[in-house]
Length: 212
Length: 155
Image (cartoon, rainbow over all chains, first blue to last red):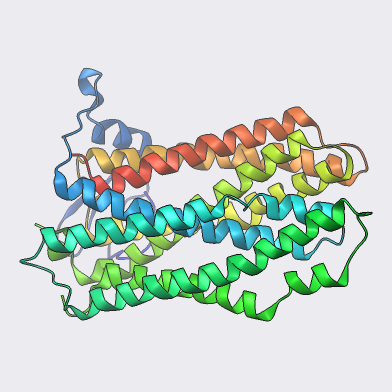
């Protein structure tokens, strides 16, 4: 087993399969293969994995985090498509690459809506622990708004670039300074960078929950 | 009880690294799948361009994201002394992580061969591009399952 951190100083590790490790506090860390651990943790001893049912909190948290992953996937997809498209000259290539993100608004709008909906229900459900007056929750809501506004603005420019590329592709497919300028638009790039930064900052707030 | 109330502060940084890596991994996997499948449907220079972009996405996006996600996961496990824990969600995470790593490496090799052949002037082999796309799609589905397991912790 690889220990990335927290390997206590003075650890008496015996480097052979099956040996145990003893840390400073005297805790025993059993050295087992990854396959053995996976098998054991899934409780496959009787052939059937044992998974407990999810409660309301689990479902709400799953919905909330699924929304975050949808928005993050949309942002990464947009980044890859724009980076690749800005290196191409032929409008048909650009149209194809930006065409990959033409359904991205579904990821953004559905993901963004799910984040907000499930997040609000979570706060209402856990009213003994959290409230809408908590600084980190207010911060997260503001960052959600920033992501939405900047994402829409960047999406508009790149959506326009896609339409231009499609038009130019059917009109001779020759390189166009207009298309190149749209793909290198500093404003759109800044908006996109801001939406990435905002979603990362929101994740930081969700994990650290300052003041909670 | 909310998870936040029982999570020690020392876990926050490794958890952040793990989550950010996982977010980037899901996004780059999605991009890789779309590019490789689009490449199979295209022809000539367009197919070459999509294969190259798909392979680069796997190499420069998926692989680094996987490493960040996996290092974060191991760090969290180390901080929380989960080495001997008997949790199904942890098992699912290991299973998806380890099998996913193997499939990612195979799809990188397969995609790399297609990438090289495309670079030599010939058309990228469709079967290899399809194979790389399918393997990447399997890893993507596995990653979504892992997100469910890590979030809902069904133990």
